[in-house]
Length: 78
Image (cartoon, rainbow, N blue to C red; front, side, top):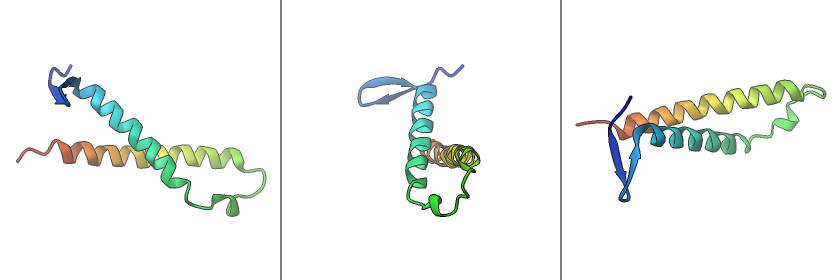
């Protein structure tokens, strides 16, 4: 259990809560970023279930990578 506390704007925020917020924001921004591609031209008819499975996995993967980068970048101690 982490006992470290980060002060963000005068409010005590646990590192775990901050980490969860970063992960949610990263996944949502990955979903938003994937919307710019024209997937409807590449999808065969009747394959929407597989596309949504791909879309969820891709956005979770990209969101995880983005959140890991942000958290590692922020917690670098020089």
